[in-house]
Length: 325
Image (cartoon, rainbow, N blue to C red):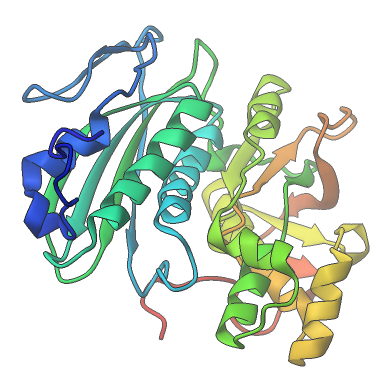
């Protein structure tokens, strides 16, 4: 039972009916914080242990109609997606998430079940990572907006940066490529086929352990794949002052992806190379060193600039642009 419900009384239908503080109470009631949370929600600010002496911080936003649709995804799935895309950012630095701050914008007529579901998804994912949700904000907005800030702990290790790639490195990836972009295309085509690909768009599943293992194994550079493989490798190349050569023969492609592309009449390589939102990881490793478990070699780093695929520059856009149509 939530704090605003009483036996025999109807459950309020909207967040306006419930009220700001009751919505917050519903989100935090009964939640257990990890040991890193010294003081959670309820005061002017939270207090989180930072034993390493450094804190890895990242923030991201999801806007209804731009990053998710509630006719495609459940509120709980939206909450899980919000955590995944933020946790992947700190994991790409080699850090483990310790705490999340969540700000939520809601129209007054938002059903209270939507707010409850988003909160539940956020808490579920945070708890799976051993992290806490330690605070945030709730405001009125024209559409549902979720802003998440994540804190991460390096536990004494070096941070893995985009700027560390070196000529001669091996380029490798961990996780899925193209599934989320394919799922989006299926949703837009109003297709219910390939439920696994639809699910991949609703909720990404970053291979966090692979990122942490890569950091421990001495990866020279790393990033999560949020904007597309070529776009995100391009960020590493630009930061490191190097170029990369990729080979499609080395990149595993799901048979479902190939089948979906044939049905939709498109090139599945567009999804694989430029799709984004799968939140796998791309990294460069010293040559001659065995890749950690879960990582697959797809190319090499060289002196120069730019990225080639099978010896040629990929035509068109390399990935997601926030202000594209």
